[in-house]
Length: 197
Length: 197
DNA sequence: GTCTATAGATAGATAGAC
DNA sequence: GTCTATCTATCTATAGAC
Image 1: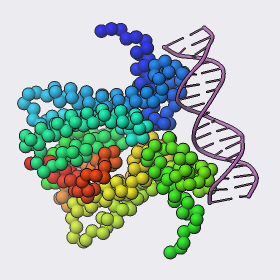
Image 2: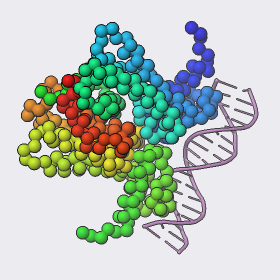
Image 3: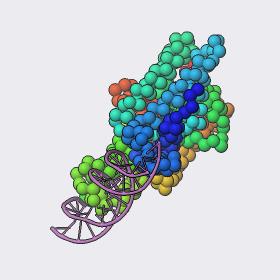
Image 4: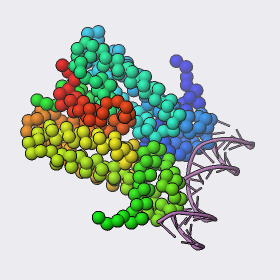
């Protein structure tokens, strides 16, 4: 393992600080001085590592998706051979929620800022989102073909509502209640079995 | 019916324009000039109708909740006497989604900007959100007590996931697919009956 | 009621020292 | 690599004319 260059370390600390501030105040309201202060440097120092505020913002948004996608894929691929499709979706769901609520700043910054990001940045990030969405799509098609999801279910709507329910937890989650795993299990129950007796 | 004063009309047009811009670019990135241009006046003219940009913002956020709440309550109260609790929740769900996706600007501006609004404004709007949430809470408690929702269901999680799934549609909805009513019906099916065979 | 003009503050970005 | 200094642009808000 190479020792990390000083510039790499600072770059990462700038990204962390940016994710934190973009999450708290949003992209437009966050100043480079806000970010630099968190890092312990001056605003001008950021320009050695990033070309512009926009480039820094785009990097944070992209990491927000990449972190979740990698975690979910790793978790699903780590399941034993005999896992059902429902098992895979359940694990994907739980990993998505855990990553969202625990490694919060990047993923939360993405969720909160995506809709109001400048167009070119939004377009660039949307590509990543779609690739992640395609991964979920495949999980669901496989489950439906195997008979674990009813044939009459609109898989696109199912996926969008499910991911939406999870992502919205960013708005209301407080760490003092149920554990994240329990929350994920309840969500899986709602969507697979429903709430009717 | 009183004829509307000119100032009332302009005030409303400023609110409409503000909701539109706050939805598109977010509160921080929207300038008073953006809003004034949409209305057809100058930025300084806004100050005759509103004390500050913040006050205008708060008004837009509040209307975002009020519009949905009033629509939902009216729809639920308009159900015939024999309606089941499931009927009520289903109608509330559909009305929430329709209002969200059709009278879009106020509700969407609320959803998109709430998390990054300045603290005092967020606190003020949160009160309204909680009152609306309490309305849903009551619908669900009644349904559970009547045996239409299983006793082991955590009603808070059920409500938060359901509202989250609906609100997130703001991110992906495009008017060229299924009708909003069909979308709402599918959502109700997912949550009440689940997707398993 | 809305305008013009402008005050006052702060932002992103660049140049050049160290 | 990070600093100081500064340029240029743009924003909210106010003052006063009409």
